Length: 446
Image (cartoon, rainbow, N blue to C red):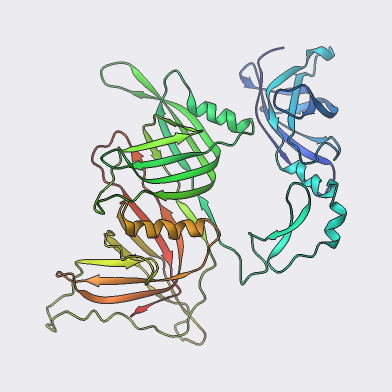
């Protein structure tokens, strides 16, 4: 029998710890979703293509497949899961067939995910040492590949509060299809258990690297092929890949001219170890999760904006501003074009209890590769890593002559989100802008 294809499969534990785990998949037969009873054979191997089977063969007859979907429970015992890589081999045949040789082996084999490896904690050679392992404050037991040791608790517990985390939203990349179906190949690689990384590189006018976003461990969300009409006859095909990533890091190559601007059609996109031609890339926003600041019980000093001239009809104007991400340690960045937010919000107008918090603040401006913007990149990378300490920032409002009108201090600043700009090869001279949103515990005049 031919035409059988396993489109997706997943593994998970359910209930109390045991050696069994659930397996769900989607099966097509002759290009259509499979329907009815099918017989399955499941085997474990130590590689994606080798012949060395690990453990026993599990056969399940008459498993109902509905609309292409099926689910079953597998139990190979705990012995095969001793820390090494395992690959699941699936054979299937119609339930109406009785010849044992009629099983069609579905390729490729699937990498066994982390779910069955929960068995390893109970089956590891040093499991008896866990009871006697004494870890300090902020540490938890971790398996280092050979033994249980005390390691840092990166999730939280043992510190003053929950540790912040950072996640990246959904990315989207679009390319014209040639002879190679690169995005489809990427989806296949991930389905086979291989990790796929990449980068979006922003280039300056001289086509030199200015800024970059490296991303690691993509997880496909959707993949589609679209037909678009082209004037003059003929049609070009596009393929679109949407994906999330497990981790990102930011990079910057400082240029000689701090006023260098970056544009939408100057970029490189790297995926799976090499640069590929794409039409457009929309990076996912980076979202930071950090506990909201505690409300304060006093009204802080508000800006006075000295410099209005004292005339009733003299309105105050701002002709620019400087912003220091880390007051006194980073350079004042004059490249931003807008700052907004930070409203004082009264949770309890009667002030019976602490009741003042501040809304998020948004910084918006052209994407540049200046020394000042390097300070921002370093600050965000600290929060993407393991340095999650709020800082104090400073805003200096300038008049038409570049003199200071007022200084505003932001105390206890933590990032909320970073929105890197999208790129598009079809757009000429479209300037790139970036957005940072942050929260502060207190905002007051200096």
